[in-house]
Length: 124
Image (tube, rainbow, N blue to C red):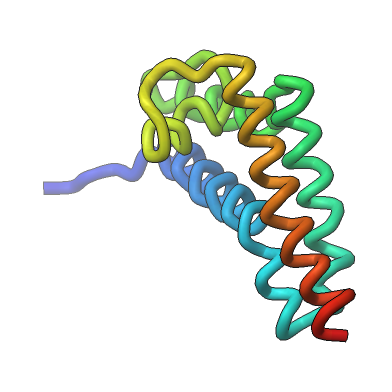
């Protein structure tokens, strides 16, 4: 029995994995600076982007691409952004409010401020 691969579904899944890895990098990439300070040039723009997305309520550009691939694959598309769809169900109940989204932005800012302070002020 031959099965065909739905490349649009595979593409959507790859985008989800890349997106999730990016979110983890934004949240915890500051810890990597303890061992590899040069990563700051990649991490700092990612953190700024992540915080900007949370504070403004914008939708990450990866989300429409994922939805387009889902549509082509005949899969369910979703409203909102990646964080609401995949991250929030892991961390919080269903209802993501704007206030909670802003709090998440501050959490990202705080985690990374602590990491950067440690790496560039304490550890030197």
